[in-house]
Length: 358
Ligand SMILES: Cc1cc2nc3c(=O)[nH]c(=O)nc-3n(C[C@H](O)[C@H](O)[C@H](O)COP(=O)(O)OP(=O)(O)OC[C@H]3O[C@@H](n4cnc5c(N)ncnc54)[C@H](O)[C@@H]3O)c2cc1C
Image (cartoon, rainbow, N blue to C red; front, side, top):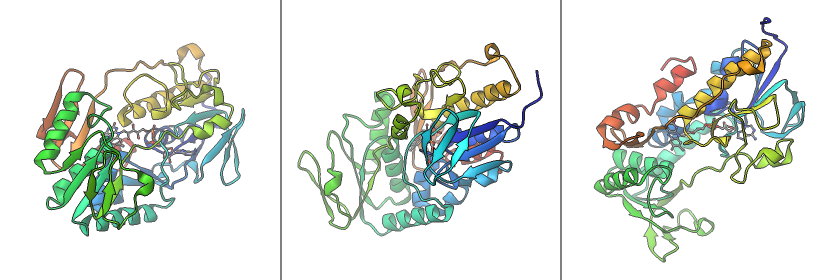
């Protein structure tokens, strides 16, 4: 095998869970470029704690420069991909030999860490100064937010409205029942099979109407309805035929986008049939880093490692001590899964993966 060719340009689009790890892993073996609109990696599963404890965010927002000492960081959005380049919103054309799309979910977050910290402080002030709070959406974000507020501010009146028949529809009904029971024990009012018309919502009005005509009084509200996949922009690129109906990129078992040998995709954006979880996205990143490294060294196609999805675990935190966890053969709730996730929300572990102290 040849020595690593340092002139290979590897471009990673998206500095989230998978993209940041992949960029970190390949920075010393290639000319590495990371394209992300933000200057930091925002660990998604820590965000809701930062809303009730803003100082927690200091370590959960990891500047890309903290783990990428040997790469180029472009703070912009990718808007197009050609056969040789990635075009960014701010007008740059970034050449690639290998490209990885890791754009997961879209959310308009501030570009600077300082502004993101400010956002958490504002959320905290909003929660603190309100007696009653409406949360719209009963997926993991809505349930975890309700759990954080109910734990740290037990006197607040919390109402959670969810359009589905049960909470946490991404996992099984047993987990939904356990989460519901816990929320009720904390006096959170949960309204299922109802929606709140987001267009008619105005902060400060104090009243919200649901689709079934229920009126909810709340001093403030939070929308927690799951972020869309960031794949709309791909429909204007050379990958347009590789985006499926759900907005996922079709990949082979080596995470190469179908029909594009030098273009890979990792994380939630892929169409791999498995639960979309961050630790799984990290697994994709590790495997693709290994495979790209091998290709850069002149390794044979047949030597690339394939990916086999395994069974997944999901843990939804319920405040600082409790959680509900779905393992392949059982679903449990209480302080045992709480001990695994809820104390620091995997912050130390995630920072360690990025080579940083906890
Ligand atoms: C409340 C909650 C709790 C969770 N808890 C857990 C947990 O305990 N354990 C777990 O394993 N998983 C958990 N997850 C799931 C996990 O967060 C996702 O599976 C993970 O974030 C997917 O990683 P990703 O890299 O594919 O995408 P993301 O982390 O969404 O990263 C995408 C990145 O791409 C960037 N981007 C988007 N569009 C563009 C563009 N056009 N150009 C450039 N950059 C772009 C974004 O800015 C972002 O940085 C949780 C999710 C939520 C919402």
